[in-house]
Length: 407
Image (cartoon, rainbow, N blue to C red; front, side, top):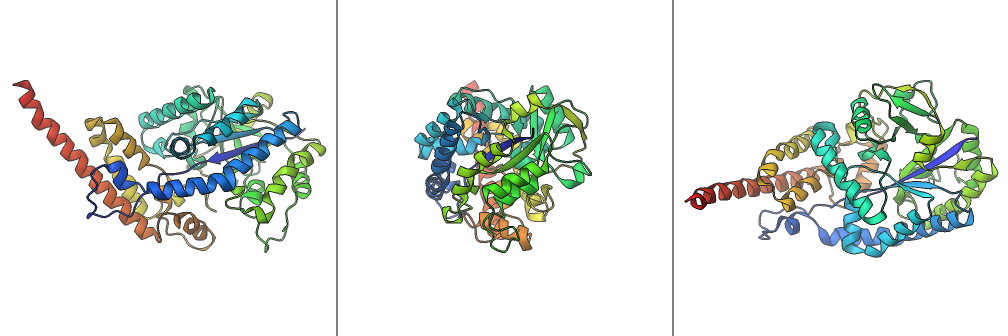
């Protein structure tokens, strides 16, 4: 029997304002982040996607007696915005978890790339995420998913030492080679289990579902279930952005009707559903995969080029890393929180200079915050410069106060 492992990413970044040096607001929390826009977008997506899709999934779990099972990864920034703008939404997710058919995964609180450059910072952000998940859902995740599906061999070793049973990653062709993504593997150098994303079947829903020019349009639940059965293997990892349902794919496309019908078609075809931890418990490791260089789930390249490819992105990434030395010396929880929010991967995604299909996707997500990659870069770097000046002034102030206190 082939199992289906649905995993949904739920994320909202704290989008930045277009920085102005003429702004006299002294509080960086108010000055840097566009709270009005963030609340507007959050409430819109909650009404179009989160609430209706949660309701559908809860109904499907009840109608299948718990046979429909899914996994979620809620970023810390998403949960924080829910706490600020719509606490009842978190209760909606808690109702799903209480069914026993929904699993929560771990990741970095800030949806950052800390795993690339600072293991201590990475572990701290994961620790914060675990605490937040336990606070709201009373569970301790056993499976990890890294920001944007980023995975590399060394991360596997780190996650194994941190006690995780498994991790999800992108099933990139260059990693799998002749192998199918529909099996459990392990990364080179570690014994942690790994399930690759079946990106073709995932993207049939996440990207191609509403495209009238797609040769398989329209995609029905019956057709898709037949594809899943034909794909075979032990377990098929279908990982996608939760906003696929209702936000990226509007209700008029039929995406909700598709979701409502799919579990029954899957079960009729002799398959079942598993959470990710259940997949790792049930299925053995079939082979070893080499994730070197790093792989992500973004763009056609499925590497880091969506965030770290051009000079703008690298300048911004290096600058935010450099600020750690000031942030740690100041040791102010509020300022540390702001520094970590500035690490969120979306900030670098907006600076992409890609074109064609990948460029269109970048432009789609960037449009919520900035008009061009250059606008995103200029605003981000001005924000970092202002933040650095603030940190330096704070250190000078503390140093000048120290001698007087000693006297």
